[in-house]
Length: 267
Image (cartoon, rainbow, N blue to C red; front, side):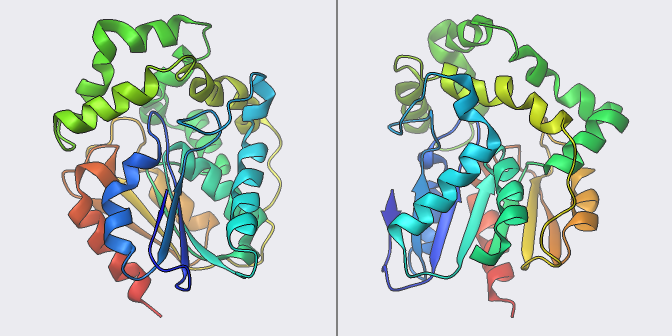
């Protein structure tokens, strides 16, 4: 989904789980005034292709999807602004590490990098408890069954304060399609090895300016991620969004948009 003038700077939005491009609706409206904004459905989500094999959902493949998308829609652009949330942020950190030469600025929300996630899972009891669902999603078919219970009640639980009945119905419609939950859950099933594998040093000598936003009331990602990310990514600003839950860009869009604008206005 895109909006704005194609001659303006490119801003690409990458969603998390269980979301799709629609999770960026507030930001698309706000930033289409000054950017060419593009929000994608990641592979396995929405109307994007859904490979059947689990290895197709490895993070390296999703990183390449973003690179190919940008090169495909904007072949003449040298750099773009990357905005990502949750799983999108996990993939986004990997992207800026591998392809920093393509990134002008980046904004990540409520999702750790590979290195930080690995450290927290090993040392933080708080984060380990918050990540219980990751281990639940390793099971076959049961997570899908659970998420479909009571007419996909899970979406009413997590998005009830994010825009009303129309928002809930949009998520129910999208994820009620055949296998619409299995392929996104395969991100969890396939990528435990990514976090457990050997950690190479960051590729670039320095990073473009970045912003990391976290909801104050995030139940899935610990605020410990912020300072740890700042140690690995220079030029990274960390801000907590007051009163916001994990789905920060939907729960407190006005604040998130303001923090984004303040960051993007800096030289």
